[in-house]
Amino acid sequence: MADLFADTAPGLTSPAIDGIMVAPHDSNPLGHVSRAVYVGVGGDIRAELVSGAQLTFSAVPAGSMLPMRATKILSSGTTASSIVALW
Image (cartoon, rainbow, N blue to C red; front, side, top):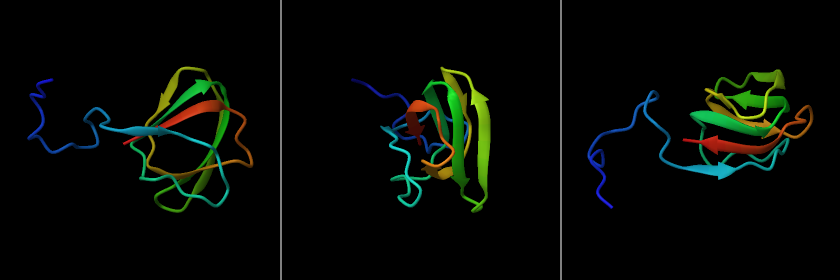
């Protein structure tokens, strides 16, 4: 399949080029720093961001895309599921 953008460097406003299903965990980091997180089943998301700050995003609706540079999706405090980290 032809990729007209193969020679273009991705930026933070570019579409994601890869991703992974997330199993929230309090100590295991994501494989890469995310560019965004997709929430399949709504609830709360507790994330650790690149800065080291840990924040809770409350009542995130199903189907939401959160533009965040996360290093971890923490299991304590996360009630949402079917989470995908994109980079």
